[in-house]
Image: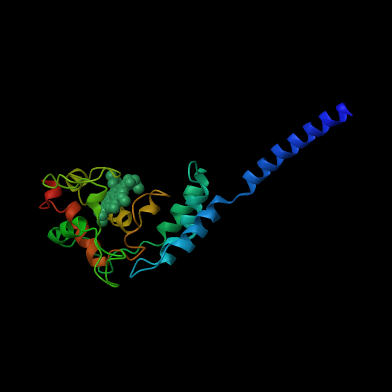
Length: 207
Ligand code: HEC
């Protein structure tokens, strides 16, 4: 009697452990988080719940590999994102750096407190140093101070810089930088102005 009781106890413990393990494996935390967002996030103005929960293929892949990503997956994402880049229709890459500075300074647009269709900013300073004058900047991204002075305005630099601003994920699969052109955050004219901020020799970025 005693022996059987002991064995039953062991079996029960094993089952409990196995049960917990299978529960842990089966919980889809991605889905749990998504359901939470769908249920609790309320759309207001241009800040819509669709924008938060509807991931495109690149975003899904980045979520599937949050820590380490096989090189082939990164290459797949980058190739797909590269195809989305639209170069300036008139072949002119540079606008006015003075306007670019205002865009880089502005973090407005697409927030619940903004009007639908209002002009968006680029908020570049939130992540990058750009000029010597502005001392309040974030550092998630590299400093862009002297960007144009160091790189010049060759065709490859124009194409790369435009592409990076248009769709940062074309060059870095799961970049933290917003895809300004691809997601319609900045217009073509605004990207030209920001390009001038980075590349015009007269811009404070290059002083
Ligand atoms: C939320 C943060 C964030 C914002 C906002 C942001 N960036 Fe970035 N940016 C990054 C990060 C991080 C990198 C480096 C990693 C990478 O390449 O994706 C980067 C890289 C770059 C590069 C490439 C630098 C190099 O040395 O090749 C350029 C150019 C750039 N950003 C320009 C801009 C401009 C212009 C804006 C505003 C319109 C902007 N970024 C807004 C995060 C940001």
